[in-house]
Image (cartoon, rainbow, N blue to C red; front, side, top):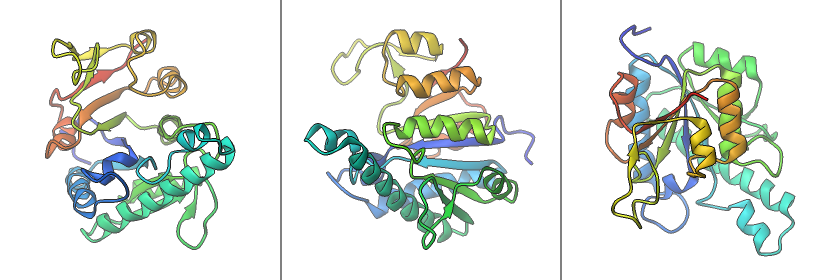
Length: 241
């Protein structure tokens, strides 16, 4: 293990939208390839990496529910979308020589392992990237909550919250307010009280209760993840009570 790195086991949270790039739907292979390059660089530093991917580029359960679909059915469809994204990311990583396993919270034996905590930890210890798909396996929970849950189960040092062209947490939307102020650090309490939309409240509370800090950063900046691992101040750190 490289002792110079600041974080030795991390969880990367990627939105489904991150995989579609400038497209309005689906998976953009060139974007997935770029993300895989950055993850490979982190793995080469000796970091144990697990990932949670959303499914909003294919199907978002809450949106389906809003249009009249049964909420539980819509959420299960969203979970299946996360499996598709996870397989795409696995393929990109393995083509770069990074051994990867997909574990799902819903059983799909033909394409991925079922989630087993001890097996996932063993994969990490052997240097494999583990991608957690299928959310928590339950409707009514977001992939943000799944990320917080898996981060706690894997005992990670930090969650890297990858945002698309958003370089941290601001006191208001920087795309609307040119005078928006970026935070270098902010507490969980302030994020929740100010409703800053870093994660949903359940996910944030889970991180707070288990003392898991979050770094919000712009994943489109090449090499940002590696710089964070080496201790550079990039993005916004969410932590503390």
